[in-house]
Length: 83
Image: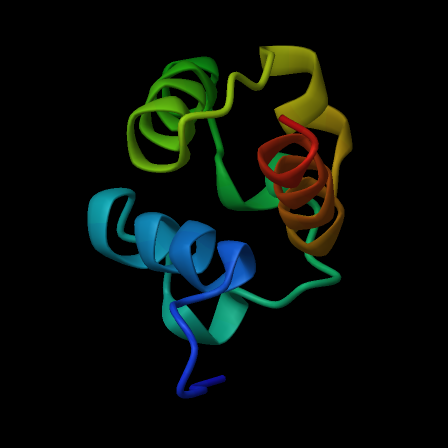
């Protein structure tokens, strides 16, 4: 998903999953539950930190356990533009 605009939140979170957490790229789909991609509690904590560092938005661990990838991206984007 490449555009001439800056990378989307979905793209950035997807990159984190693949590059930092070594999730196979074929598993990284918008409909994928994050609990299936981040397989243990340490990964969830690390992802919350990575999203905050990369995108400047705090997400809590429960949100990461219950959201899909697309749902998290939409929520983060809403918070980023709502400031």
